[in-house]
Every structure is written in C-alpha cells, then in structure tokens.
Length: 431
Image (cartoon, rainbow, N blue to C red; front, side):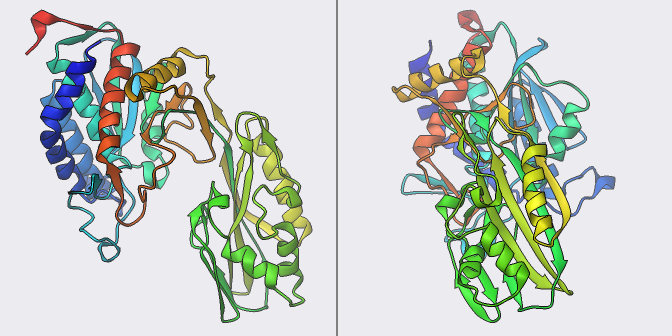
C-alpha cells in the first residue's frame, strides 16, 4: 500500500530532508558538563538538539511533550500507543582535525552523507520524522497509536531512557534505529569489570576505554601495535595488550597469570573458564581491554559479551574467581542480562516483511554482542539503521550514511508505522 507514493515522496523531498539533517548535525550534541539550572541536564548541545526535534515534531502535527530536556515524546494523536520508535539526538565527540570535512557541517559526496551523527543517530531520527511527515501528508490515518521517543543521553549511559521509563511505560512494541537491518532481536549479555593488584614492575600503558580493543600497548618503553575494534567484536581487531603479554619473557607473576588467562588470538574466554555459546548468539566474547601501571598498582579492564543461556551472575562469578586466584582484587563489576524478542512475535515478523518489501529480498533475524538502545526495554528490537556489511565509520572520523541507506531508513520506517499501527489512506484528508 502506497509503495510508489512513499518512494516518490522521498525523491521529491530529499533536498528538504538533507536541509533538516544539516540543521541537526550542526548542533554539537556530544556530552558536556550538565547545567541543570538552565534546563540542560546533559549539556547545551544535547538540549538544543532535543529542542530542534520537538520543534520539528510540532510543525508536522505531533503532540509533543518534553521530559525536562532529557527525553522528547511525540504522539501521532491521542490514542494509546502500541508502537514506539526510540532514537537519540546526542552523539559522541568529534575532533575536526581528524575529519576530511568539518564534522558539524553536512557534506554529500560520492553517494554518502557525511557529518557527526549521520548514522548514529541523527540521520535515522530525521528519516523517522520525515516518514511520519510523509504518511500524514499522504492522508494516512492510524487505527492504533504511534509514539516517537527521542533521548539526549544514549552515548553516555542511557540515563534518559531510565528517566522516561520511571515516569510512563513504553508501548508493547518498540523499535530503535540503533542497530542493524534486517532485525536485531537478540543481544548478548554484558560484563564489564575493573581489577587491580599491588605492583612494582615495568611501566605499562594499554587501552583507553573498556569497550574497545586496544590498538596500542606500551610496556617498558616498547610499543606493541594492534588493530582497534569494538569490544564486542574482538575478532575484528588485534589486541595490543595480549600481544604484549604473549611476548613477555619476564618473571612477574601478575603478568604471567594474565598472559595465561587471556592468550593472544583467543576471543571467547575459554582459557579463563568461559567459552560459552548458544544457537541464538553463537560464541561469547571476552577481551582484556585495559592494562596500566601506576601509583603502585597494576590495573586492568575486561569486556565480556555472553549468550542468552547464561546469566550475569554465572559469567561474572567465573571470571572474578579466576582473577582473584591470580592475585587481583575486583574494583568494579557491572553488566546486563541478555535481551531477546522471539522471532515469531508479531513485531519481528512484521518488520521482516517490511524489510522484504523495501529490499526485495528475504531477511532473517540477527544477533549481536553490542548493546542497543532497547536492550533493557521489554519487547524492543533494533531495526536499522545500518546494514551489517557497511563501513560507515560510526563513532569515528568521517562518519557517514550512504544515501541509499538513508532512503531505505525512510522507506522502512514509513511502512513499519503503517503496518504495525493499522494505517489506512483517508483520501478526503489528503493535503
């Protein structure tokens, strides 16, 4: 229904969509020191980006409510929503010196849209907003309620969604453009822990954040080079810390113990007593991502993503026991249980049908170790915004979204809203 009209709308309004996206990209909405007295709990940029979203929502006829510039909530009409699209307007920081074009200026070249947030998550947010605008202008009426929720703190802890969830429930179905197509319905659980022990050995500096495979490790003045990757995908990189440990020839018991627990090139933690897998998510991952000396201590960090048939308590208990046996103290441990929405659910089956309609090919469910925006939201799945085969430099320099993927985002969300919310064309109401 309305396939040709929706495609034509995109073609006719692409310049308008890019102009809107350029306005949103121009706002540096990476986290800044909070200024709660000014109504900017996550910084001025985040608040300005949420204000832009709210203003746009009002212009296209959505009923908008601001939850203290933490979350913007926009409803199609007064009906109780059965579906929500959850996206975010904040971004990670950008260093202009690393970009070939200014990160906060939209640039379209070689079939791609460049700018911070174009793939995560401002581009998809604009695609959803224009999908709603398109349906309204085509005279579509929904028999069931639709809601859009846009947060301002996804990149720094998701306090925005926790704040919203404490005040009103999410609808029974939630989709987020914070993952991959076709449908990401299964996310591994996560363990992040920091550990330390008294230490007076060689100077070591490896890793910067717990959820990234380190590409550099300096040990006693020698630099070990690796390849960076997301912490949930260690097989895509080369861990510089474990590379150092594999070549270490000294007699420090702590370093020798870590070298045994985390062999270079092993990604599933089997040697450390883990190595679990299941049919839904495949092999778990385990990566030693931080190792530093200083102030009389050796400090380390570990990123683990585990399958749906295990629990946080079980997995964290195993790795904590191994580290304590090696002489370390656990300084911090936190994580999440796995998240799963059955493939035979109405939401997942409908989205797979939408994917086939737009792409002209059958899609299947996928699982990942990464944590999406709906990980802690019952009934929520990721639907886009990228394809698994794309290299869009998300979170990096020259972040971009292909124009073809931006178009698919728009088409996917328009059809998803129609099909899940009972959209029907009201000829008399067309503008």
